[in-house]
Amino acid sequence: MEFLKKSWKWIVGAIGFFIGLVWFMNTNSSKKVKKIKKNIKSNEKKTKEVDKKIENVKKKKKVTKKKIADTNEELKKIKKKKPKVKKKSGKQATNALKNRLKKRN
Image (cartoon, rainbow, N blue to C red; front, side):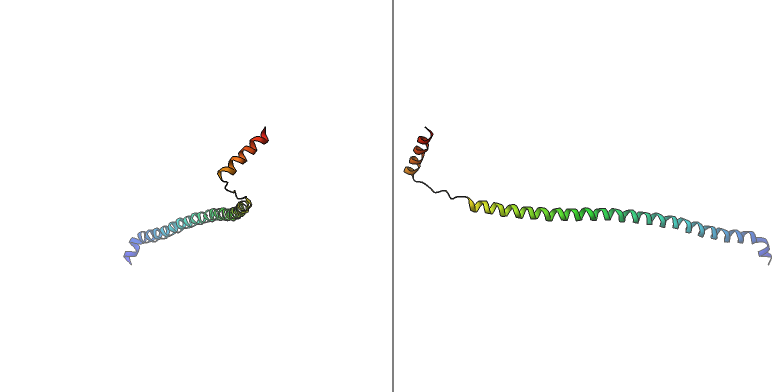
């Protein structure tokens, strides 16, 4: 009993120290949790923006593929419409050239 009478201040001080330490650690961790939650929300916003950009790029990609296919079809049609050039012999070429020159004069 004498030990408690002499050292009650030390015991109360140690208990108070542990209670204060636990309280300090708890408030510090709650601040960290709030900060982490804030970071998570900002990251979610950024990922939504990136997802929108990805969707826009996919849409543009589809449109460009369609345009490429259309232009390829047009080129094929144009190639089919081109008249085939007949090869002329030497006499035919000279006669054709002479005729063109006569028409000019």
